[in-house]
Length: 118
Image (cartoon, rainbow, N blue to C red; front, side, top):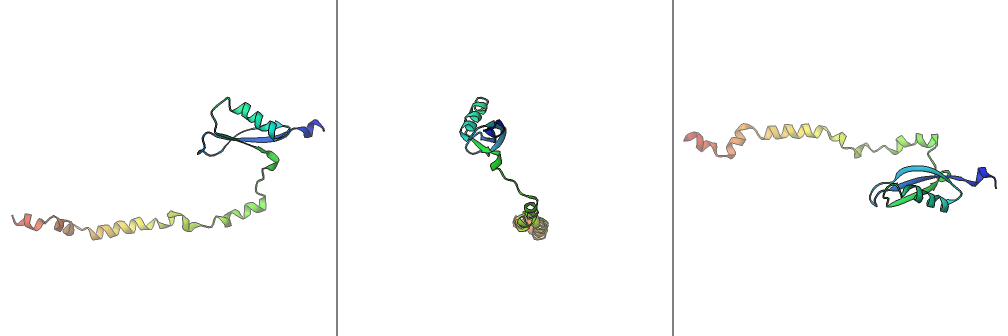
């Protein structure tokens, strides 16, 4: 085996606690997955506490192709899920409340007719 093909690139991700999301940490060179996880533990765990470490071979990570990226806007066609489309409701509700709660009506709640007569 040539030295060029002996080492593989691995990417290391970690979680501080079981509930936090994964965070990318660093890359490393190792001959296989087992050595890569040991190297990640040795290099990372002495720096800070960690709940979990993920080690992934870089060649196993795949990103979207240019053609696949063109399909993203079509997949994100869910404007009905965004509340920004209902912004007019606040103004409409405010007008409704103002029309409903005029001065005469509010004063009638407290029995001000009796107070005015006194």
